[in-house]
Length: 164
Length: 164
Length: 81
Length: 81
Image 1 (cartoon, rainbow over the protein chains, first blue to last red):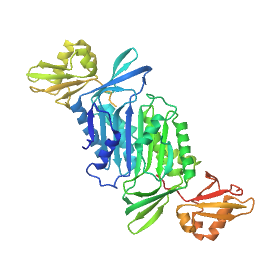
Image 2: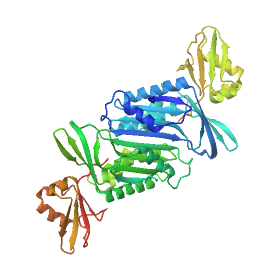
Image 3: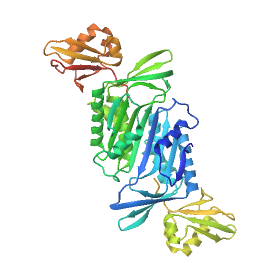
Image 4: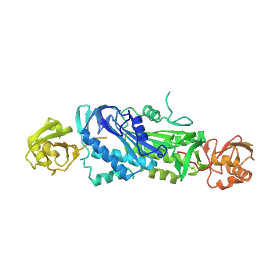
């Protein structure tokens, strides 16, 4: 069974399969791409001085998938030779577990690096996903960016961070 | 058997094991790191308008390993919380094969991305490794940078490209 | 007409429900529904400047006019990754 | 005294050998050995500004004085990655 390029769900993330799905996806013959860059986000045991016990991720899944599609489309526009695979996990995650796995593949390493970095910044900006932190002594919903997929300044900031 | 962090040799590159070796390497407890970034360099089927049939990589292996150690040390100085694994393959490589595999692991994604990019730029600058390209109609040794590990301008250029 | 309301993360905790149904007048917007909820659950009001909104699993603005059966979602600031 | 010379990539092709041994006078430097080789194999001369050099698998400059038994390596511009 082939692995989808974009996915969200409760299962553990399999980076190797996710990267492999990019290799076999349509549009690029073997030998065209010269670079694969991957990113794994892991659950840390400390945050803002609190000792974290575990996390729970929640998502508005259909909209999250559309946000991933939007990110893939932005990458296809900005780096036309570069393709994206992006999986996010939801549910309870232990310390050290991977919450997000990203792979990019391109003829050129500069584009693969930039697109991979861009993707994680955009996930944090626009994907309707929330993290609840259970720490020693309590729990708290983490609140980051107000999601606005059309905000040009956020997108420009993601491009800046991606060093594009 | 554990996988070394730095290696050069003829065997196929196993990115998953290389990244795993970083997770278990000394100095960082589970839960400290929040980001793993990897890079795979793949053999492309075209170069400078030539149709490439295959490549042969050759190295001055003991010096190449020392160059990798130097790169790891530069990263430890520049990004003290970030660790590097770096494997390069030698011998005959087919189109689509991975020639170099890099993994970085850090509490922070910015450092993991920057160090991973820095590492590949430094490999291309200072590692005594050469690529012979066999294309339709002939073959040629590819010659890039004159290796000078002490050149401050090359190192600064690698940092600039890494967006550090 | 009737709409379904989806609430996530802290908004869900404040309202004590992940999903609600509400009857609204024709011509109502997302904003109409939000103000009604904020009067029912005063803890929501503080989020007015920070939320994002969606209709039928697509981002939409507060002035979007709703139809019968629409699913309206209120999203606090996100923290994926 | 005697040194081992290692040649790589195109330099190896030009000399037709990956490894050579050469007798050199005490006080000889890497540069001494290079100039001797370049006179034997004229094709090498074009590389003088582009090569890197090493002694016993450590990068070293052209003016490095050699000892008996040293391994001297001449490295054309690299192309790893």
